[in-house]
Length: 112
Image (cartoon, rainbow, N blue to C red; front, side):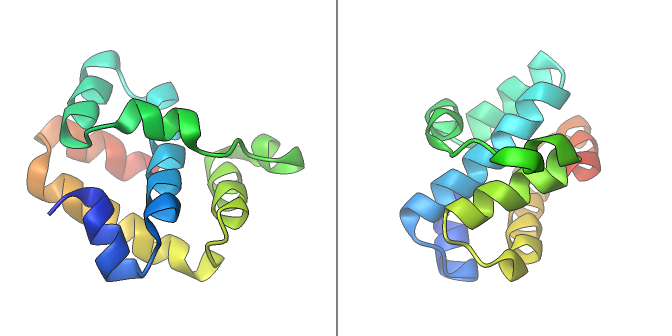
């Protein structure tokens, strides 16, 4: 099952919400991960570049509050209750734990 399918079935997100949330996380990862690890993430999540491009940008002051503030802003713009941020992170990390390399797991654990 893909990451998007897991977010839809486990967290109860719609397809656009799941893709936007993954895009927002991907945008953060893109700026923080070494290129080889970001490339690995892109292979695990087909269409990641498009999801990053399609995800809303953090609004206002949220962009200045760091990664968590930026992510909260995007989730809010997508109509996702902020109470679902934890479950989203849990599904994303579970997916990476099951499919990613040790280096990717360790790097993403610091970000999510």
